[in-house]
Image (cartoon, rainbow, N blue to C red; front, side, top):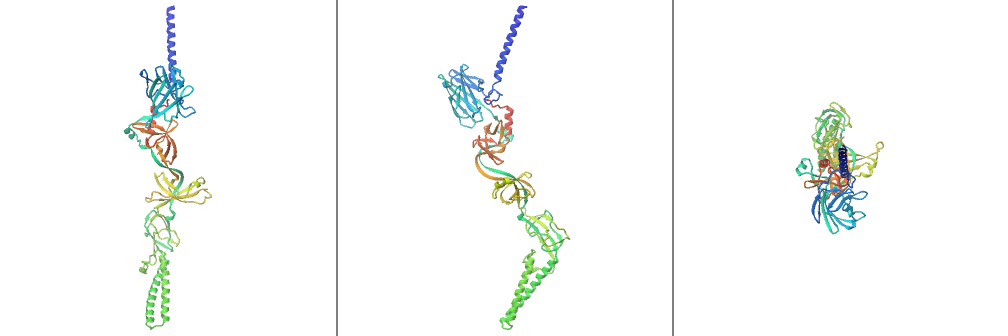
Length: 512
């Protein structure tokens, strides 16, 4: 019994020791974190390779006590980390021998990093209290191939490894299928704009109200609301007694003028032949002048009603009371206020005709914008309902502010050859404050948010990599890239959210 109890006790003790060792090792492996304060979500993207004086060896990268990448070669090791707590990101390297810290002044170290699409960056180090500190800021993204060279006690140690984040591989065919269009980063003109609300209205300078100028009765209507008309087209017919009187007056004056001219010619000839007295000649000349004045007066009354000079001599007693109301301009009938059989006055508005080849985009200007809107400024007028836009120039800014609305008015004259800009349509008016040429600009759709960055996905062969960028001015279509994307770099201009989603699925970490 004693032997059995002893064996059982020893077995329990051994099992407990094994379990304790397993828990201790597992806990150390799972608790590592990078210098960004993120828990280690994944193991390294690639294996570190060391090349010491005694040959080559490969091993799985491990974490050091400071959360960085631990690279070993025999008894010597360095821990490479990117430190960014309260300072711009920088390399800090901690040397060890046999697991114990080494005085950094005894180690010469350099690092070369190779980014996609960029020249190699050489980083030099200087000793600090317990580490070696890099001489430059390590800008995001921290995604590159790293070459580490260290010299300690006469021996050189070299390591190569990759640190990758925000990358996704996608060939050209797959990218095209996903709707990703590739552009090249290049200069562009960015407009600083202010958006105002407006409404399309008739061009009041091209709006005509048709009045008969004589009273009468409507006997015929030729054009209706919405009809297109040409200048000179008959709109309606009026029977007017007043017109009959004017035509009769003209015909009588015309005949009196013919008689006066005949009498003058005869009296002149008789006076020249000494047959009649000069007094008769002068009287006939006076009568001719008076007849010419009367005829001209009667003629002007009719031409003022729209009759042509060439047609007046052909007038006769037929249709003396008929007045044709004709279109004064090319346009569209937007108002019709008459009906057959209706009596109208001389100043009654019968039709309103609008020339829609141009329209006004009238804007409402609030006091805060009064100093920013001036005549001559370029604007872009957009109608979301029509998916249409047009460019123009502000031609008028009101000098007064409305008592009720407390706003001013401004307008833009727009060409409207196809008449898609319909009066009454609400529009957005983008007023261009200034224009500037920028070294790099991309479409707004190319910008994505990844972690706390605004990024553009740069393309290198079949690899897309998220590049954090600093944004500048934007006009709603293009946005300036102040830094982060070099001119000439290819990038995903459309559907870049597909790349962001794939990176999210891959669980890319920020593991330094």
